[in-house]
Image (cartoon, rainbow, N blue to C red; front, side, top):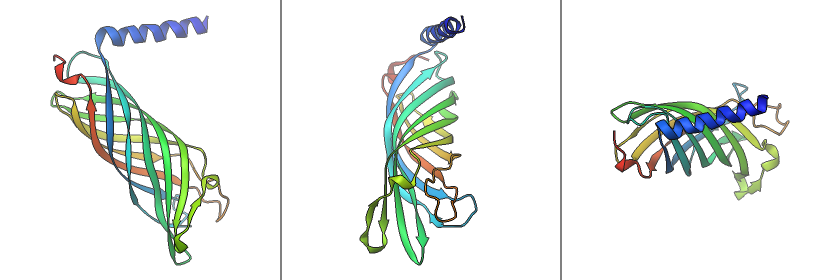
Length: 205
């Protein structure tokens, strides 16, 4: 009975979105300013590193108008990590994630958006470079998944081209290495970039 009810609710939700709004596919890309933190434990002296992000999105609108609420799931490749000092030397941690944010958005009639929502990440690779020209695989030092919360804003023109700025706050300890001091390490990423929603330019408002 519960399974039948769930299927019915999902079907009605999909019909409602199809009947009242529309779904638009898009591409996005931009720059990351990423950092790591150890929750004030001060085991490492972290500083940010710059990297890139890029991926695809679906914008699911709940109304036919230019303004209103929408749901935006994404799949984004994201370069993260940070730079830290240890024993008088600097090292750079390069973390590559495939992130899946699910954002609730509200778009105003002037094209500005506010957005927030959870983000689940899968670690694809982890490398460390620095002292002695090392380039080590450190995947075992970090957990294979991450969870964060996104806050941001955007502006989209009526032709579908937009600019997006977002901060992802890591709320999950990604450290898988007990040394030193079994520190809790969290991701933090500021993102800014461009996106384009296909087919948006011919929509009527």
